[in-house]
Amino acid sequence: MKCRYAFLLVLICVFISPAPAQINRSSQTGGNANIRGMVLLPNGSPVNEPVKVTLKVMRGDQATTYTDRDGRFEFKAVAAGEYTVEAEADRSRDRFEITDETITVRINTPNFITVTLREKGKTQEKHNGTVSVAMLDQKVPPAAKHEYDNAMQLARAGKSDESIAALQRAVTLYPDYLMALNDLGAQLLDAGRLDEALAALKKATQIDPKSFNPLLNLGIVLVQKKMFTDAVATLDRALTAEPSSPPAHLYTGMAASGANDPARAEREFKAAHDLGGSSFAVALVYLARLSVKQGHKQDAIDALQLYLREDPSGPNVAVAKKMLADLQAK
Image 1: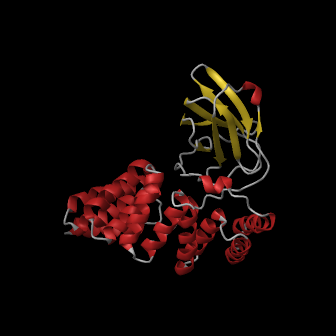
Image 2 (image 1 turned 30 degrees about the vertical axis):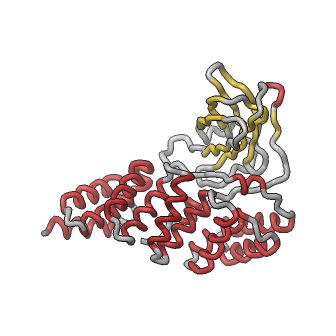
Image 3 (image 1 turned 60 degrees about the vertical axis):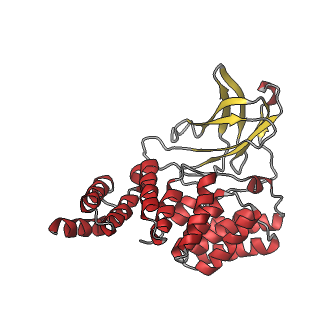
């Protein structure tokens, strides 16, 4: 199967901007913790227009702010405790649901959160948008940031070679540019340039060993290169950062299968489907293949039938139907 998740689900385009969020400080209570985060669109990219973000507690609203032009927001001087962060976007056009996430705020430790908007009337996967400390805190030179922004525009226009070249220039100007290295690795992966992708993503994970997106992208590259043992180790680190990530579980299952660990592979494929639902129905096809190898015919049939019910027009339907027909004919 072509690796279609690497760019669509993993390339979280987190922009860095010197412009601070506009915070309604008058409504905040005392404390010595900050909450920093981002609001993402359903496709995983940051919102590029102001979105109202409200910090809520059980007794009501505590603070309100708006995202900056790169989707970032911050609440300062927040007391420790449980909060809900609510994002309300595009109210006049009634496009997105009011979306919220919960966070436990602790004193003297970083408190980060991402909120992914959901379009009304649509069922969609939840994107994993972990934002690392390094991504938020890097002071990117303007020239490198310009090349990065140019790369994102070129990528949206479908000009992948030009986008890759712009990202390479950004990294040349600022070698520790974590976002650019991650996005460069993801785009090189999408283009099948695996050795170059491996180098970029290894550098990104060296800059921030706990950053989810570079770890996941690196794990996918290692799976594609059939370096399965290394892939499992890398993806385990990604799962430590985001244990509920469907793509991380999916690719860990692929890596475990390649590393001859069928029990782990089965657990990971089931987790990918349980967490991702019909958006990750492809995990059922991998689960069926694993069941065939283990001689579990009925389990394979059940998985394929469920896949065909959940994704009747998906890209793997022909493969699933042939597998199912072959199994039922035996």
